[in-house]
Figure 1 (cartoon, rainbow, N blue to C red):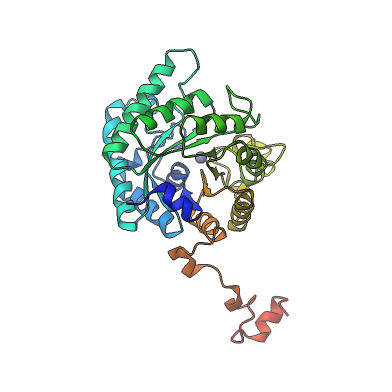
Figure 2 (cartoon, protein in one colour):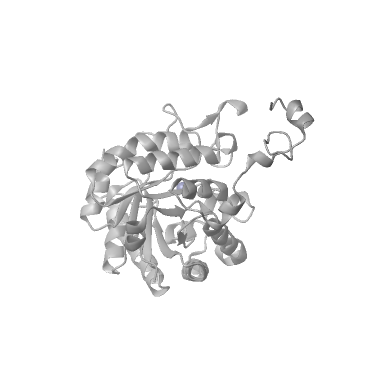
Length: 340
Ligand SMILES: [Zn+2]
């Protein structure tokens, strides 16, 4: 049986996220409502994406139930598919995890209804409990509770996971303000999640490598458990630290989120560098969130010293017809490219 703590004791763990954006880009999921109906409509697409991410180095297969919760389904008038969608997502992920020997993760996420001191707290709690129950029945090895901008909401999710006796990875979403909505410090939020029993705490989504990295050192100092870092692969800046705040000068300064982020996409090298720097800080649960593609995941896995199956096809520019140095490359072509 794959076990998260045992894997982390052996070395870094890589987790691919970002199923929502990738299915949207491939034309199987609608931007806007962003509900993962693809799980029911085109299960083969989801299964293939799980396999691609494992091939690229993901140690975790995260069931695609992100935004597959009651509030989202109510918005599109399809609450009746809540349970079939969750069960199907879990069964697809379970098949890939068992065939590849990776960890099967259930998923809880921001409910988009939670507000402290309102009846929505009870609604969020009930939503977490039903999703955790389905994940536990599907044999999940762990649950990822992610993308929370409220500490209180994350703690509710964690409580549901703890009640099921499963290991929890809890990751917070830090928007442009640099704080959570009910807790000024991401490090303090992580500390409280650890105190409440999370196995791994950290950050996911919203921030690109450049604006997530500075937050990780403080989190590493604040907790004694393993720390997670799963940025979005976008070139966020100090002035525009979140993917939501990016504006594209090539389109008259239009907001890039969520369907026009392409010009901000990080290279695989930037993700590899991020992973190396995060590892140097002591972060050992690494991944990529919204916008992730397999080449990003492979770069993170290789920075963590792994050689996933996809590493067989990692670049070897020595054999390139113009840019290479292999004796088989024709000199005139090297000269033409200014490569001598
Ligand atoms: Zn994300």
